[in-house]
Length: 191
Image (cartoon, rainbow, N blue to C red; front, side):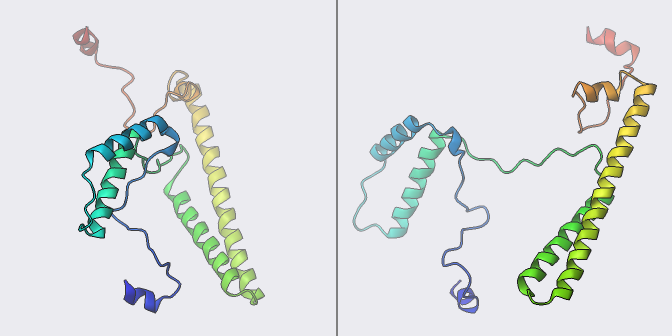
């Protein structure tokens, strides 16, 4: 790590640990302060007295274990970011356009940051970003329009099918569509 810092002086002095050994996170909004106090008192009673001959590493590890147990007892662990539900009009074409738009935006911002005096290059990058963004917006609006037309056509074909479930917010995005006509013996067997 010291080799890396000598080659790259802009790196911070302390880098947070990455991977499975990272310190866990908790949901602080659901913390029970009374439980924190009680758990810390109990943990202090239960932990052995610190010896003067123990190493700093052992003391740090004991502190980490104690804090983890206190936090686990007083608040739930924070979960990772939940992925947004997939929208009904999304397609692979829109995903490609979105990636291209993000790439063009990053390139434009990087150009502005690095080449503040090169106005011609900055303008070219801005135009490329605006074109990519506009293409994405048009693709999204046309996909939404197509999905809306399909929904209205489905309404005229089957008023109690997909359009009804969408209106009642009972449409699920995952799994195959259910069988609208179960076999005749299935209802009798279930009773």
